[in-house]
Structures are given as structure tokens and as C-alpha cells.
Length: 212
Image (cartoon, rainbow, N blue to C red; front, side):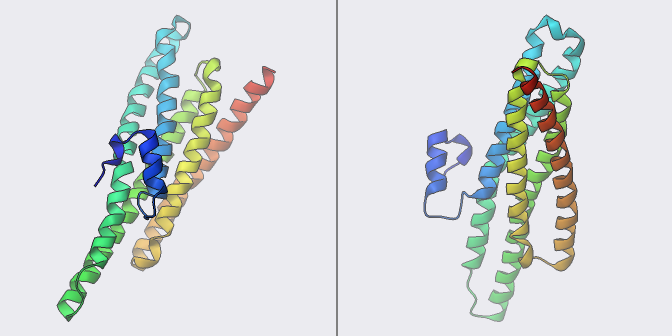
């Protein structure tokens, strides 16, 4: 099995395009979130080599460290999402001839499905935290990098909704109490991301249009 994290961009793209369900939207969402986070880290790193931004040096240094930490988590989740889906397939292939086999199979399917929900949920949770980081960085960034902030914000929104959809698609196979928990918490993250996205988008476009 390929470790998706070590593939080139070309290899990963071809891997997604194959006639298999994984890697799919969850892994792609994690990758999009990782790329957005890379841009935020870049925007924070640039002022560190520019004396003009010495008053915000500590902020950008701390932000860069946080972004790099988020980046590592999201890169790990690229591969983890694909593995989680494959675990469901393995569970569904378990024998089901006797009652004990059926019970074991059902339990393994439920366990695998819950984990396959936890992974995109974790992608979504991290994207929510990163979107707040993106908003904070946008307010203190080098204006020359403002378009990169815009790209990061849009990418984060897409990554977040992709992860959210991958949570929702698994919910019918989970217990009702788990369904409610995932929905309630996911909607909190989505709301935060959507609000941050609007604020960042308006801020970025106000600067870019002003420079015309």
C-alpha cells in the first residue's frame, strides 16, 4: 500500500484518479488544508527577514511554529483518511456464516466506520483552528503577500467543506447519539470557518482593489 504522504504531486493526482474509492475526497481535503497552512506559514515567515516588521516579529515567529504543527497533522491525515476507508472494506469482507461471525463483523464495521468519521472530523477541526490563524496573520502580514492569504482562505474553506461532507456521509451507519455529536460539533467548526472566510475575503479584496 502506498504511503500517500511520500508521493509526488503527479503521483498523488494519478492515484486519486484510479478506479478505487480511496484515496478520495477526505485525503484531498487534508491535502488542500495542508497547502493552505503552508501558505499561512510562508506569510508568517517572510516578515522574519524584513526589519520593517520587527514590531510583529514575535507574533509571526509564534504563528509560523503553530502553522508548521498544523501542517504536520494535516499531512499525516492525508494517508490516514485512505487507511480508514480501507479498514471499512476489510471489515465488510469478514465472514458472516455464523451468529458469532456476524456479530464480530458488525462490530468491526461500526468501529471502522467511526474511525473513518473521526479522521475527516479531525481534518475539519484543524481547518477551523487554522482559519483563525489565517485571520490573525492577515491583519499583520506583508501587504505584498495578501493574495497568498486569500488563496489560503479559499483553500481552507474548500478543505473544510470537503472534510465536513466526508463526516456526514458516514453518519447513517453510526449510532444516533454519535450522529448528533458529530453534527453539532462539525457545525460549530463550519460556522467559524465561514465567518473567518468572509472577513478575510473582504479584507484581501479591499486591499487588492485599492491597489488597482
